[in-house]
Length: 428
Ligand SMILES: NC(=O)c1ccc[n+]([C@@H]2O[C@H](COP(=O)([O-])OP(=O)(O)OC[C@H]3O[C@@H](n4cnc5c(N)ncnc54)[C@H](O)[C@@H]3O)[C@@H](O)[C@H]2O)c1
Ligand SMILES: N[C@@H](CCO)C(=O)O
Ligand code: NA
Image (cartoon, rainbow, N blue to C red; front, side, top):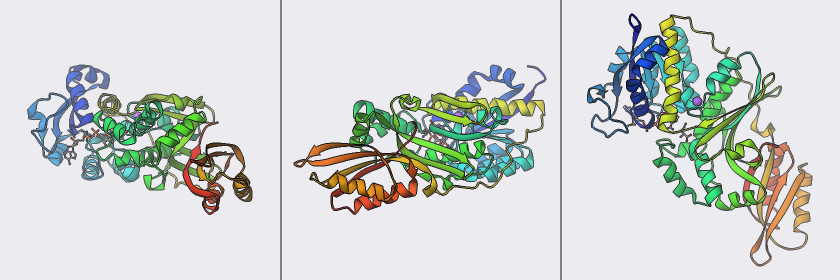
């Protein structure tokens, strides 16, 4: 395209995702230019070590250790370093000088997104982060743009590939947690520090971003009630399977007249539920909107190539807007969120107990439920007086506070040796 604008693109980071982004920018330069209405010239890649081996063969002269120097020359900055610092400083510096930024950094956006958006609004730069949530799946733009004329009431999904990979392998092969985590790391799904994945924090960051866009507000990852999967045992997975359920790490954002609730926890869902069929590192997100009804988005939630696709979609969108010189559309009006207390959410519990196998035990347990106003849906028992008895109890809907205090009271019962597990049940 002759006479077109040429945009100088700086890439920060050349790891799993960054290397694939560099490859696409170089391999598909002509096609990207005609789709963008502007040339996209990769002017440099900021790395820590110039000599490191990369996933992709790239021209050596592109590499630099001077990230700020590179940002200084760029029109568009792609941040794929991860972590809060220095990524946050680099993004702020780029936006502050009017360069647009594309990032996959959910940890940073979920904590500092509001601040960074303010800088972008002040300088007229764009900040986009489709890759930050559910990898390749287009989910942020559908929520922010396609559903801008509707009212979203709930977003529920599997948004962490690593934990889905682990739970799926535990379910299908009975594999041990640690072995599967090592595989997920080798495949490039896990964060540099995998405790962000298994502790639920990566999913919590994504839940905060989804909730902020869906409910036109600013919700930080610190406002998300978060439980990870480290306590989920092979016995839990097997017992859930026996009862017709599968365990998934779910991110849930809900808005009602009472307020907003955003939470992440391992949850049982029926095998007949569409989320139960999400295997490996795949992600899926359900969106419920007043007029659109139920929508589902499914695809690769992690991995270098897949995530690079989402990054490149944002790069083209940014370039188109710069090339057109179009004014930025107004984003969502940020209102302060009215957060619902976690104790007030309504859920169902699945409780595993190790109990004495003798008469009167079931009656004592049922009494505790009755005293807390929690109704039992079903109960099953394994084991015997010799090996020790295990009960798995599924409740009807109750408030989190009633369910949690029921568990506390069960622990105090003479008939109960220990509480083996407590998990919530989602879906119908
Ligand atoms: N891998 C995925 O599947 C995936 C999916 C969606 C989003 N993301 C996000 O994309 C970002 C990058 O992820 P990744 O998987 O490519 O990570 P990675 O660890 O493979 O790559 C990051 C690279 O940045 C480099 N780096 C870190 N700090 C640096 C600094 N100060 N200066 C120069 N280089 C530095 C590291 O050495 C590494 O090579 C993260 O924010 C991650 O959360 C990753
Ligand atoms: N570590 C993340 C990468 C994608 O955001 C995951 O496993 O889903
Ligand atoms: Na996405």
